Image 1 (cartoon, rainbow, N blue to C red):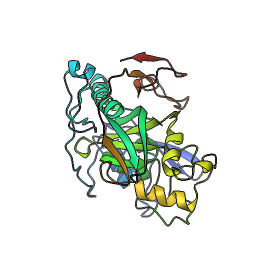
Image 2: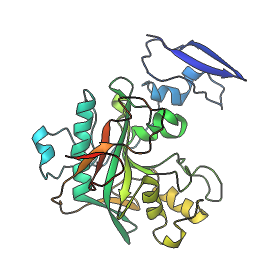
Image 3: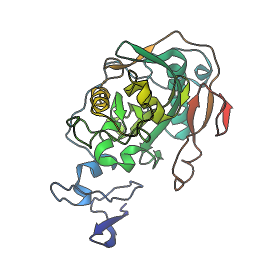
Image 4: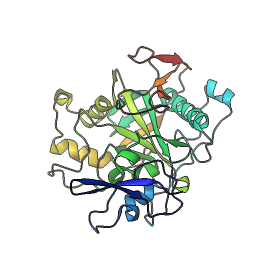
Length: 303
């Protein structure tokens, strides 16, 4: 089935059918390859989001990903073989949510973050952002919104993705290429799957005593310079730290996700915070935020 796409030509906007037959993606094809001036349907980023093959090779995870556990296991203190969820074969949103709950329970109650062996934080809140063009076409996922910088990254699994940061990173003296500013950025654990074109990231939405994805990244990047937390621009030193973390494995890079003794405490689930007003249902109110904290400005219910 063909679908309509939007092509910008100067100040005019023209609608036409996509050239690729059989495309069932539920997104507008408004991408272009500026370098080669290819059509929208030929660009590499377009192919990634639309589920077509790309020749680029990506690193294979060094530890096995988990499979969905029975519903009873979600309510037990079970340490999973890996904290990274495997969404391959997920049938619908309920299945995706169940796998995320299992993984979040393991991460929040049985893991912590460590940076350079000198700083550590408990993880308090996670949010899932996943896009599959048929099963769950969530428009809030970075692979959908910023495909040129995020599509290939969110097909990975078990790596750190600093929001919109380039990989490999440019020289720290450059002004661009290190993602959004300190008060708008964040960091994900990638949980995608190239075999089924699943783009996914688990947002670190709270660590330590503070809430917020931007605050979490700033706490990590400025762990040795806490007096600079209010600065609104990344310094060259900050950029070097971001470049050292972005794209590395969660179990072996400078920022590590390490196992800890499983805690026996409740978790709370609710809708994700800070979504754009234009995001429609069912994505806006989907319960994909899990936290060890109950008191939020958004309604939360106990798992």
